[in-house]
Length: 233
Image (cartoon, rainbow, N blue to C red; front, side, top):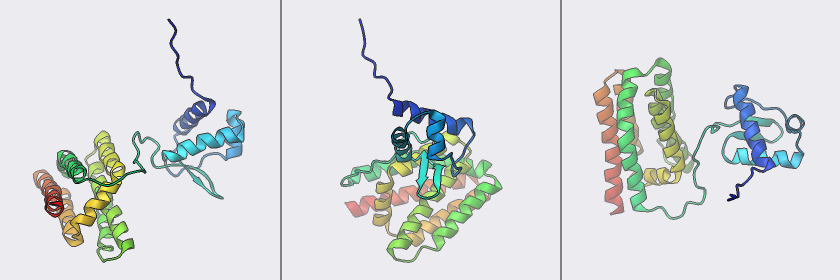
Protein backbone atom coordinates (compact mmCIF):
# COMPACT_ATOMS: atom_id res chain seq x y z
CA UNK A 1 0.00 0.00 0.00
CA UNK A 2 1.48 3.32 -1.03
CA UNK A 3 1.25 6.54 0.94
CA UNK A 4 1.46 10.02 -0.53
CA UNK A 5 4.13 11.98 1.29
CA UNK A 6 4.54 15.63 0.55
CA UNK A 7 8.05 16.30 -0.62
CA UNK A 8 9.70 19.48 0.55
CA UNK A 9 9.94 22.15 -2.12
CA UNK A 10 13.23 23.73 -3.14
CA UNK A 11 12.24 26.78 -1.10
CA UNK A 12 11.53 24.60 1.95
CA UNK A 13 14.90 22.93 1.61
CA UNK A 14 16.67 26.25 1.14
CA UNK A 15 14.98 27.69 4.23
CA UNK A 16 16.27 24.80 6.32
CA UNK A 17 19.77 25.10 4.84
CA UNK A 18 19.90 28.80 5.68
CA UNK A 19 18.83 28.13 9.26
CA UNK A 20 21.54 25.49 9.48
CA UNK A 21 24.07 28.03 8.15
CA UNK A 22 23.11 30.49 10.89
CA UNK A 23 23.38 27.87 13.61
CA UNK A 24 26.53 26.15 12.39
CA UNK A 25 28.33 29.49 12.08
CA UNK A 26 27.25 30.45 15.60
CA UNK A 27 25.52 33.63 14.40
CA UNK A 28 23.39 35.59 16.85
CA UNK A 29 20.68 38.23 16.63
CA UNK A 30 22.04 41.28 14.83
CA UNK A 31 24.87 39.44 13.06
CA UNK A 32 25.10 40.04 9.34
CA UNK A 33 24.63 37.26 6.81
CA UNK A 34 26.29 37.05 3.38
CA UNK A 35 24.68 39.09 0.62
CA UNK A 36 21.82 37.70 -1.46
CA UNK A 37 24.20 37.19 -4.36
CA UNK A 38 26.68 35.28 -2.22
CA UNK A 39 23.88 33.12 -0.80
CA UNK A 40 22.53 32.35 -4.27
CA UNK A 41 25.98 31.21 -5.38
CA UNK A 42 26.63 29.27 -2.19
CA UNK A 43 23.40 27.28 -2.41
CA UNK A 44 23.32 27.17 -6.22
CA UNK A 45 19.81 28.58 -6.49
CA UNK A 46 18.21 31.32 -8.54
CA UNK A 47 17.54 34.75 -7.08
CA UNK A 48 13.70 34.29 -7.05
CA UNK A 49 14.03 31.04 -5.09
CA UNK A 50 16.35 32.68 -2.61
CA UNK A 51 14.03 35.65 -2.18
CA UNK A 52 11.09 33.36 -1.40
CA UNK A 53 13.12 31.63 1.31
CA UNK A 54 14.22 34.99 2.70
CA UNK A 55 10.63 36.22 2.86
CA UNK A 56 9.64 33.11 4.81
CA UNK A 57 12.45 33.59 7.28
CA UNK A 58 11.67 37.29 7.66
CA UNK A 59 7.98 36.54 8.34
CA UNK A 60 8.92 34.45 11.37
CA UNK A 61 11.52 36.91 12.65
CA UNK A 62 14.46 34.58 11.94
CA UNK A 63 16.12 37.22 9.77
CA UNK A 64 15.79 40.93 9.06
CA UNK A 65 16.05 42.39 5.58
CA UNK A 66 17.38 45.94 5.88
CA UNK A 67 17.05 47.91 2.67
CA UNK A 68 20.41 49.19 1.53
CA UNK A 69 22.21 47.45 4.35
CA UNK A 70 21.90 43.68 4.06
CA UNK A 71 20.52 40.54 5.68
CA UNK A 72 20.77 40.12 9.44
CA UNK A 73 19.92 37.40 11.95
CA UNK A 74 16.62 38.27 13.64
CA UNK A 75 15.79 38.25 17.33
CA UNK A 76 13.17 35.51 16.90
CA UNK A 77 15.36 32.87 15.28
CA UNK A 78 14.28 30.08 17.65
CA UNK A 79 10.69 31.18 18.16
CA UNK A 80 8.21 28.36 17.62
CA UNK A 81 5.05 30.46 17.94
CA UNK A 82 4.27 33.87 16.51
CA UNK A 83 1.49 36.35 17.02
CA UNK A 84 -1.65 36.17 14.92
CA UNK A 85 -1.77 39.40 12.87
CA UNK A 86 -5.51 38.98 12.22
CA UNK A 87 -6.86 39.28 15.75
CA UNK A 88 -10.52 40.30 15.78
CA UNK A 89 -12.58 41.64 18.66
CA UNK A 90 -10.92 40.90 21.99
CA UNK A 91 -13.18 39.03 24.39
CA UNK A 92 -13.37 39.58 28.14
CA UNK A 93 -12.81 35.89 28.85
CA UNK A 94 -9.62 35.78 26.79
CA UNK A 95 -8.11 38.73 28.65
CA UNK A 96 -8.84 37.09 32.00
CA UNK A 97 -7.53 33.71 30.84
CA UNK A 98 -4.27 35.35 29.80
CA UNK A 99 -3.90 36.87 33.26
CA UNK A 100 -4.75 33.50 34.86
CA UNK A 101 -1.99 31.86 32.81
CA UNK A 102 0.50 34.48 33.89
CA UNK A 103 -0.57 34.10 37.53
CA UNK A 104 0.34 30.42 37.37
CA UNK A 105 3.80 31.00 35.91
CA UNK A 106 5.24 34.37 36.87
CA UNK A 107 5.11 34.45 40.71
CA UNK A 108 7.37 31.38 41.12
CA UNK A 109 9.72 32.85 38.52
CA UNK A 110 9.95 36.07 40.55
CA UNK A 111 10.91 33.99 43.59
CA UNK A 112 13.57 32.18 41.58
CA UNK A 113 14.85 35.51 40.26
CA UNK A 114 15.29 36.70 43.85
CA UNK A 115 17.20 33.50 44.60
CA UNK A 116 19.65 33.44 41.70
CA UNK A 117 19.68 36.77 39.82
CA UNK A 118 23.09 38.10 38.86
CA UNK A 119 24.28 41.73 38.56
CA UNK A 120 23.55 41.78 34.84
CA UNK A 121 19.98 40.63 35.45
CA UNK A 122 19.39 43.35 38.02
CA UNK A 123 20.83 45.97 35.73
CA UNK A 124 18.43 44.97 32.96
CA UNK A 125 15.49 45.19 35.35
CA UNK A 126 16.57 48.64 36.53
CA UNK A 127 17.05 49.82 32.96
CA UNK A 128 13.55 48.85 31.82
CA UNK A 129 11.99 50.45 34.89
CA UNK A 130 13.94 53.64 34.23
CA UNK A 131 12.46 53.57 30.72
CA UNK A 132 9.00 53.09 32.21
CA UNK A 133 9.52 56.02 34.60
CA UNK A 134 10.25 58.31 31.65
CA UNK A 135 6.94 57.43 29.98
CA UNK A 136 4.38 57.78 32.77
CA UNK A 137 2.98 60.91 31.14
CA UNK A 138 -0.04 60.92 28.84
CA UNK A 139 0.18 60.63 25.07
CA UNK A 140 0.04 57.87 22.51
CA UNK A 141 3.81 57.61 22.04
CA UNK A 142 4.49 57.54 25.77
CA UNK A 143 1.79 54.90 26.22
CA UNK A 144 3.37 52.66 23.58
CA UNK A 145 6.83 53.02 25.11
CA UNK A 146 5.49 52.37 28.60
CA UNK A 147 3.77 49.21 27.39
CA UNK A 148 7.02 47.93 25.87
CA UNK A 149 8.92 48.74 29.08
CA UNK A 150 6.32 46.95 31.21
CA UNK A 151 6.46 43.84 29.06
CA UNK A 152 10.27 43.99 29.05
CA UNK A 153 10.21 44.04 32.86
CA UNK A 154 8.21 40.82 33.01
CA UNK A 155 10.44 39.18 30.41
CA UNK A 156 13.57 40.29 32.26
CA UNK A 157 12.20 38.92 35.54
CA UNK A 158 11.58 35.56 33.87
CA UNK A 159 15.08 35.69 32.38
CA UNK A 160 16.61 36.37 35.79
CA UNK A 161 15.04 33.15 37.09
CA UNK A 162 17.54 31.22 35.00
CA UNK A 163 15.19 28.74 33.34
CA UNK A 164 15.50 29.28 29.60
CA UNK A 165 12.43 27.17 28.78
CA UNK A 166 10.11 29.07 31.12
CA UNK A 167 11.66 32.34 30.00
CA UNK A 168 10.74 31.43 26.42
CA UNK A 169 7.23 30.50 27.56
CA UNK A 170 6.70 33.95 29.09
CA UNK A 171 8.31 35.69 26.12
CA UNK A 172 6.09 33.80 23.69
CA UNK A 173 2.99 34.32 25.83
CA UNK A 174 3.49 38.08 25.90
CA UNK A 175 4.28 38.35 22.21
CA UNK A 176 1.59 36.02 20.92
CA UNK A 177 -0.99 37.87 23.01
CA UNK A 178 0.43 41.33 22.43
CA UNK A 179 -2.99 42.70 21.40
CA UNK A 180 -4.58 41.42 24.60
CA UNK A 181 -1.74 42.87 26.68
CA UNK A 182 -2.21 46.31 25.13
CA UNK A 183 -5.93 46.12 25.83
CA UNK A 184 -5.26 45.11 29.45
CA UNK A 185 -3.03 48.14 29.90
CA UNK A 186 -5.64 50.41 28.32
CA UNK A 187 -8.41 49.15 30.62
CA UNK A 188 -6.24 49.10 33.77
CA UNK A 189 -5.14 52.66 33.01
CA UNK A 190 -3.11 53.34 36.17
CA UNK A 191 0.45 53.91 35.04
CA UNK A 192 1.85 55.09 38.37
CA UNK A 193 0.35 52.20 40.31
CA UNK A 194 1.68 49.69 37.79
CA UNK A 195 5.13 51.25 37.94
CA UNK A 196 5.24 51.32 41.75
CA UNK A 197 4.26 47.65 41.94
CA UNK A 198 7.04 46.79 39.51
CA UNK A 199 9.49 48.78 41.65
CA UNK A 200 8.43 46.82 44.72
CA UNK A 201 8.97 43.51 42.91
CA UNK A 202 12.43 44.64 41.83
CA UNK A 203 13.24 45.65 45.41
CA UNK A 204 12.41 42.16 46.65
CA UNK A 205 14.48 40.56 43.89
CA UNK A 206 17.44 42.85 44.64
CA UNK A 207 17.34 41.96 48.34
CA UNK A 208 16.98 38.24 47.65
CA UNK A 209 13.59 37.95 49.36
CA UNK A 210 12.15 35.00 47.47
CA UNK A 211 8.78 34.71 49.24
CA UNK A 212 8.20 38.46 49.11
CA UNK A 213 9.08 38.64 45.40
CA UNK A 214 6.64 35.81 44.68
CA UNK A 215 3.87 37.35 46.78
CA UNK A 216 4.33 40.79 45.21
CA UNK A 217 4.22 39.39 41.67
CA UNK A 218 1.11 37.37 42.47
CA UNK A 219 -0.54 40.37 44.11
CA UNK A 220 0.37 42.59 41.16
CA UNK A 221 -1.15 40.30 38.53
CA UNK A 222 -4.18 39.50 40.69
CA UNK A 223 -4.72 43.22 41.19
CA UNK A 224 -4.67 43.82 37.45
CA UNK A 225 -7.09 40.93 36.89
CA UNK A 226 -9.47 42.28 39.55
CA UNK A 227 -9.54 45.72 37.93
CA UNK A 228 -10.18 44.21 34.49
CA UNK A 229 -13.04 42.10 35.88
CA UNK A 230 -14.60 45.10 37.59
CA UNK A 231 -14.38 47.40 34.60
CA UNK A 232 -15.57 44.89 32.04
CA UNK A 233 -18.50 43.88 34.24
